[in-house]
Length: 128
Image 1 (cartoon, rainbow, N blue to C red):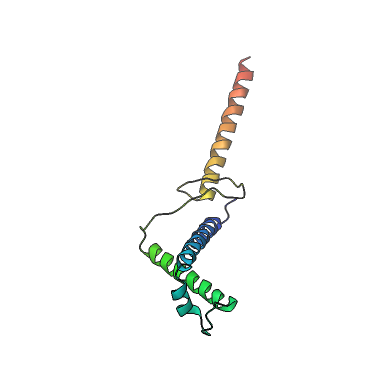
Image 2 (cartoon, rainbow, N blue to C red):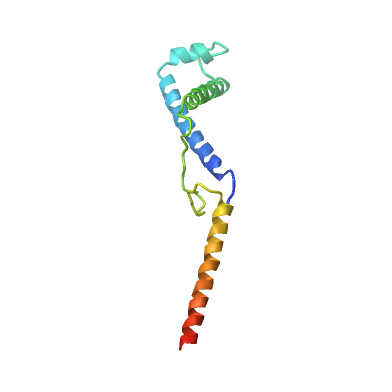
């Protein structure tokens, strides 16, 4: 059965994973720049970054990464989509028609072939 939203959920998870990776890269770049980090986030000017100030730095870095990714997505090519196999083992069908239409077509041809099979079997029995 078709469940809407699973593709967008998979894309959302992939985007979050990419954002986390970019966040780690941004923080690794920021660590050697301690002087800049202290100037920017040492709010009480005690020379140390407290946990609260570090959390503020992390959240700011996360906002910057999301803003960069949003800007990159806004410049992406229109009509480009990413498809992945469902992670929960559901069947994966790539089609240009709605699942209900595909199902009705398969149902029609299944009944048609069943009638042909039974008709051919009946004709074969009559000929004996």
